[in-house]
Image (cartoon, rainbow, N blue to C red; front, side, top):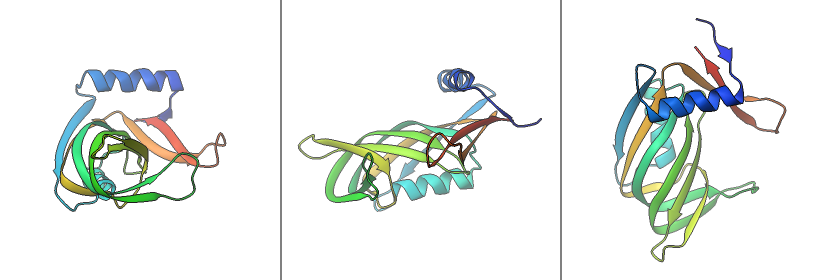
Length: 156
């Protein structure tokens, strides 16, 4: 079956359907990361090992000792060390390139977030549930709307 590009509306509707009603068109993956593991690197390793071409973060609960995030409109990452709760992890996953954002809270409840970079080390755990479409392929290409490689959604 040939790969076809979808309109943005059709893509949003199909992804919403997969996210809310797993079926023969999607699968669920669950994993747990251990102390010291790198959040981004381990997620990408899992995606590559399982051949996930169109995945998303369904849920993540855990903690970090180190973070490395790129804040909005900044060229480089910002790092920190301490104890942080993962309050949100979201984004798309693919063997063709992933795009993830992370929000963390410190011991005072102050929350920061940004683009997830390598160097976010697990403190106690990261319990992660992923969804994966079996009918889509996520690729990252320059499309001309921005200077970056952006998500392109293809169907099988």
